[in-house]
Length: 415
Ligand SMILES: O=C(O)[C@@H](CO)OP(=O)(O)O
Ligand SMILES: [Mg+2]
Image (spheres, rainbow, N blue to C red):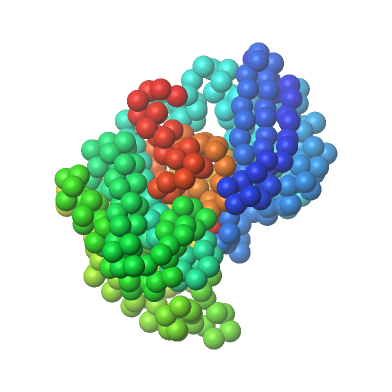
């Protein structure tokens, strides 16, 4: 019944106004799934390859579509994804493009769920997936590759670790975002927004820490549950391999790797950070291991939610959702958490395998959006279906709220 009868591919707009790939998958019994590929700006060196959409679509039509149509069952995700891999024939999807691959993979999953009449998270995770919801990490101030003339650190992330429900958590992050705007206005700092909807004022990192710390405390007092915050340093973007230093350009500071580790450890201590993503370059497994060893056990939330019982050191560009790179990290104790971005690796199967490997080894998974997004909400279902403890998908903005509102609907049994 879920035999794929058609795969249609087209170019659509993403949130940055760039073209991206959308896929429709149709099945024999009338099942339908539609999904679109997101796109990164601070992409990791080891990510699967995103091809220009026109080329990715042509290549997928030529090499993948005929292998799926009349051959594969949308309900059998591993089969669909294995066919995509075989049709591509490379390790990094450089032939059909990870953008075509991930769009087809996610659309097939939705078509499979549609035939079953089940919500996507249940098709992906099974009936007995449990009752947990991920804690949303909301980007409230940012710069780096996501906004010009703003903070060096790419993302300051509100983390409502004590929220009693996903709905409370989503609204708390929106409150923190709004409170940051008030605090910026009080200081007379004008601000636009970056690619993910976070405020992108022309302030240094130190000022951003003060403002986010204050905003989080204010909202915490209002809502009555614990809110902490975290960072995506996106340090690979500031690492200069020639001088072997991290360049904080707006602050005019250079840090060597040891100084960078000390700096991050001090920030965790001073601001009681619950989450730090990519604090070091994407090739520095040993540095990640040293930092994790120093701070990984710190920062337990005060008893609200056992899912936030330590400081997460998360590998994004380090692991690129790739089980081979994650294995290397596990071997040396680099990080205690992995960012999961399906388009970094190309298929839902690969993303699942990374989550499973992480869980087996005590690493927390953080399912994530990209800076370039669409209204596609698959990652909300992926996070719930895999029981991921965190999801990072912004705080405001239509392409971000598409996922956040879907989480609320899932909790309300209304998808
Ligand atoms: O670095 C990141 O984690 C992401 C998403 O926030 O950014 P991008 O999609 O630009 O890689
Ligand atoms: Mg990142």
